Amino acid sequence: AQRVTQPEKLLSVFKGAPVELKCNYSYSGSPELFWYVQYSRQRLQLLLRHISRESIKGFTADLNKGETSFHLKKPFAQEEDSAMYYCALGYFGNEKLTFGTGTRLTIIP
Amino acid sequence: NAGVTQTPKFRVLKTGQSMTLLCAQDMNHEYMYWYRQDPGMGLRLIHYSVGEGTTAKGEVPDGYNVSRLKKQNFLLGLESAAPSQTSVYFCASSYSRQGRGYSQPQHFGDGTRLSIL
Image 1 (cartoon, rainbow over the protein chains, first blue to last red):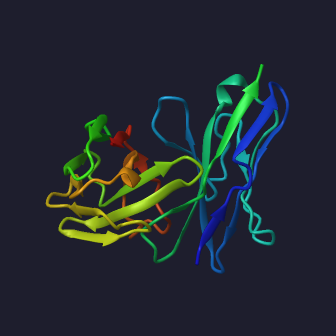
Image 2 (image 1 turned 120 degrees about the horizontal axis):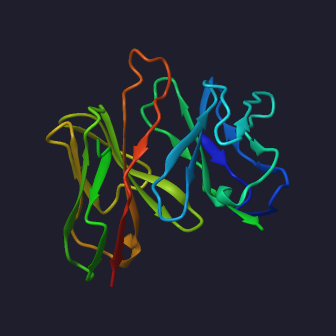
């Protein structure tokens, strides 16, 4: 079965330090991967998706099919990055997304 | 555009009571979803719909029923609430992937915080 693993439930990083939120997936075909973010008291919103290959709010994520990973990275953390982050997997023929369990990122001033 | 609107935002029920959570979207999305969010378990899909009049079970459908009589609305019902259904419920919607080639981003509502005593 398809699965998304986010190994860190909690992650604390100092302001200005690099951030990496890990996401690994299990799917044998061509995956379609997303990162969603939920700021305090706000709704979940799309942060980025791998087909766009864009940088949003300084975050990037590269699909590594060899390692079945889609880690989210940012070179310099900012306090406003504190939030809950979810990685999600989709694929051809499936109307649903499979979400990971999420990582709560806290940026320490 | 309001996007995805969920009502109510908060509700407290007693065990055995029933209620319906309402979700409305104004983006003409084909797909709609109901999730529950629990600490340490992430988002789990309850039911979803790929079009008006159609529904399907997700990962955790037991104890819930849904209906999609109109394209813009997706209702989640609890027939006999149980304490295990205490959770935050999120509705989401998206365009279908047909003609677009990839899974489309889901747009979420603000959530409904439901407590079952």
